[in-house]
Image (cartoon, rainbow, N blue to C red; front, top):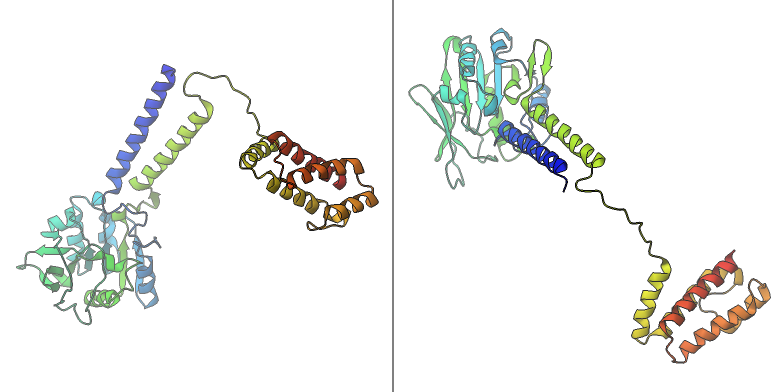
Length: 377
């Protein structure tokens, strides 16, 4: 292989590896599926159904796609953070949320994996083993018998500061901490109940109703900044997720371009392709039937095929006797009678039990084609 092309191939391979590593770092565990937990997504993990449901039942719902620094300037009283990506959480995000809560606002943080916000709020997510039939307790348990969710996470909270709102025998599911002016932050460990694929399962909608009733806000905003959808000063900035996809698409275009324009290795002489004709196919079948002693079967089917082709002009059917067919051909004067007589003699030779050679079988096929083409033309 030409060394120049070898180095080019190695460079392309390294670029592919770099893009894959970048995507793995950006997407992480919670971003592994195609569907994303945003209010824009109609897939299984999206929250479009919940967003539309709140709007339909009278809530004033909106999307918050600004950096959390702008949260203090917002006018809505309820703020929902559903399944945030830990890769977009910053160290000081919890401080911004606490400042917002101290103004008398309510925040719901639904997450099933640890992140900096929960860590700074002294909350830790853990995963109990063998969760089966839960018995729910707490102020949010009214009407909730069974919850359908994906990751069955639970919370560890400091009960000196947090009030347990929902729990079962495996741990705390929802807890709240109060702030000045009636503000509150509620942490919830089962964000999948808000997903499009889960919202109508079991008692999920009842649990969601209990949560929203506890918050008591008619105007709520869904955070999208922690999903990578961020608007800086009216200019929408693409998230690292989108940049990773764009980079991969560009790389694929480059690879296909190189593959189309360059040849890997030394040029080789092009040999013209030899087309396989129908005669070769017939010869191979003829040889097979001849060795099997079934040449009579072959010619009989060949004759029936011929009769089927010329049935219209000669006014015959595949079942018409040979003598009648010969008379019709003589009457129609579409082909020389001698050619047809010779053809039928070869057919008769195979019928009486004398096996034809492979060459003779091929000739019969050839004559059948010539006769049909002559008559039909």
